[in-house]
Length: 227
Image (cartoon, rainbow, N blue to C red; front, side, top):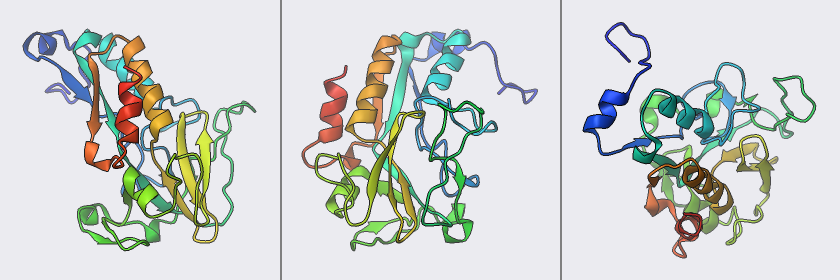
């Protein structure tokens, strides 16, 4: 933002003195902000609620439209996701556009009383499988290690069903018995984002962070194979 509090519309001067920038295209929805359970890092905002029209696609277009070269941009990719507690054991489809083909199981209100306050986001606590996490952030490797997601990432386990949202191009897990909803990225969604970065002429991608990957490095391998 400029000194007048308005968004800058010309970033050419920054490109002249910076080697590159990383666009953190994640944390667009989280339990500590907002009221809706949305995708952590949506590829597109096709089905988003009207007040949060943010996505990977939108972020890249915004920066390049201000004169910042695509060749000096790294796309940030998340190796983690967020857990929400929903009010009901059934997910209600949402449709903000009114178009029948733009329906999503994201963007429903979650139970705020079960969500951690922003100031608690760095406080570790026990997970359901005995590990340590901050109460609402889940690394991809822990979803697998805790038996909530199969090793190949293709299906949910322990009561969780894996879903794929075609609007945001991201997966999520849902367990109706505990009303637990987890938005995350997997090899498929990260590969798609990487291919998008490449086709858009970006400098590359940046993972936050690689320690969230499994020992088999399934996320990194998917990313590398897509570059």
